[in-house]
Length: 83
Image 1: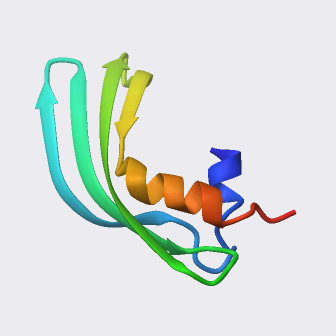
Image 2: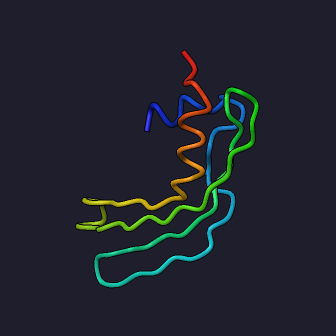
């Protein structure tokens, strides 16, 4: 996450802005959310993310995230990390 986070300004990091849905089935929770932030280049970035989380004893023990790979690739190619 550090290389991703380094592409956003401290004043407007990429964060959830809308939680679309939360689903639970036994030890698995799925969270679908929209996020937004402003890059260190001053560009707005938004994406929709789906987290698939496995819990054990109240803690996340496994996780997989899905996101818009086109938007992510544009961010990765177009914005150099700060520092």
